[in-house]
Length: 41
Image 1: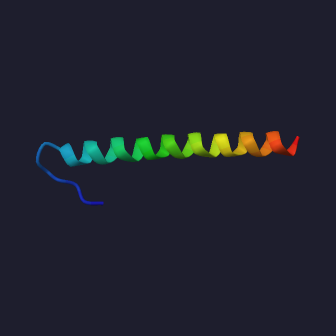
Image 2: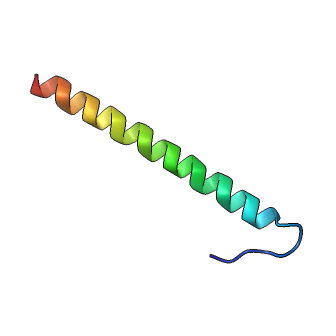
Protein backbone atom coordinates (compact mmCIF):
# COMPACT_ATOMS: atom_id res chain seq x y z
CA UNK A 1 0.00 0.00 0.00
CA UNK A 2 1.75 3.10 -1.26
CA UNK A 3 0.20 6.50 -0.71
CA UNK A 4 1.15 9.62 -2.60
CA UNK A 5 1.62 12.68 -0.41
CA UNK A 6 0.51 15.07 -3.16
CA UNK A 7 -2.99 16.08 -2.08
CA UNK A 8 -3.82 12.52 -1.01
CA UNK A 9 -5.33 11.82 -4.43
CA UNK A 10 -3.91 8.30 -4.68
CA UNK A 11 -5.21 7.51 -1.21
CA UNK A 12 -8.74 8.57 -2.17
CA UNK A 13 -8.58 6.55 -5.39
CA UNK A 14 -7.35 3.50 -3.47
CA UNK A 15 -10.13 3.77 -0.89
CA UNK A 16 -12.88 4.18 -3.49
CA UNK A 17 -11.43 1.29 -5.50
CA UNK A 18 -11.33 -1.04 -2.49
CA UNK A 19 -14.86 0.03 -1.53
CA UNK A 20 -16.04 -0.80 -5.06
CA UNK A 21 -14.32 -4.20 -4.89
CA UNK A 22 -15.92 -4.94 -1.53
CA UNK A 23 -19.37 -3.98 -2.81
CA UNK A 24 -18.91 -6.15 -5.91
CA UNK A 25 -17.77 -9.07 -3.76
CA UNK A 26 -20.77 -8.73 -1.43
CA UNK A 27 -23.20 -8.62 -4.36
CA UNK A 28 -21.48 -11.63 -5.95
CA UNK A 29 -21.60 -13.70 -2.77
CA UNK A 30 -25.22 -12.76 -2.10
CA UNK A 31 -26.28 -13.77 -5.61
CA UNK A 32 -24.27 -17.01 -5.36
CA UNK A 33 -25.88 -17.91 -2.02
CA UNK A 34 -29.34 -16.98 -3.34
CA UNK A 35 -29.03 -19.22 -6.38
CA UNK A 36 -27.49 -22.01 -4.30
CA UNK A 37 -30.36 -22.00 -1.81
CA UNK A 38 -32.93 -21.71 -4.58
CA UNK A 39 -31.51 -24.79 -6.28
CA UNK A 40 -31.26 -26.56 -2.91
CA UNK A 41 -34.96 -25.98 -2.27
